[in-house]
Length: 197
Image 1 (tube, rainbow, N blue to C red):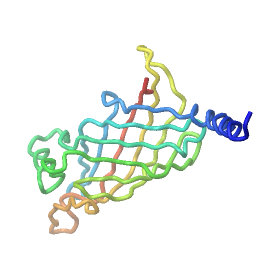
Image 2: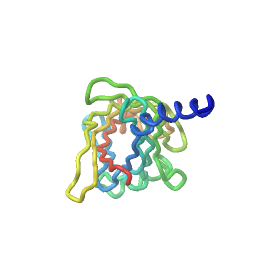
Image 3: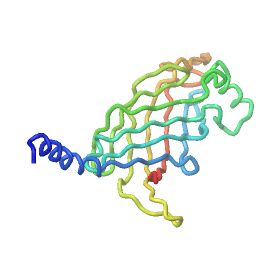
């Protein structure tokens, strides 16, 4: 056995366990939702949700901090249960979905906080503006099978963003101070993923 062949064989053997620990999971749009909450008139909170969430999670089962996620959200699907408000939110004053129909997130770093909590930092793009944000993700990385035999996992991701950072700047000042629509927006994503077959 030549030295070169032995070297290639050694590399292949060492690489095999690493390859075996990788798995790909698709975000399940039917069981995933992106919600938001923002203060209105300083006295109440308006809650709503965005449209379909899709994407891919690449897991390193041996070290979850080496995992990654890419997700896309249908901005045009925004729903606050008030038609006129939703039309305004879809328009140029807010999300301008005619020009920017999707919101995207691409992870850059995953950090373990505890056995079931991770910080996922990445690029969030809204209205064509990209800013780095960090999601706090809580969920068990232990998979289970649904009644159809699909292997699933799930969790919840939360973050707070300033809409002004993304060019979503419409608002009006109140006579007594404060804004009609607050700048800070709380985001919650309930996510379920299915192992790619």
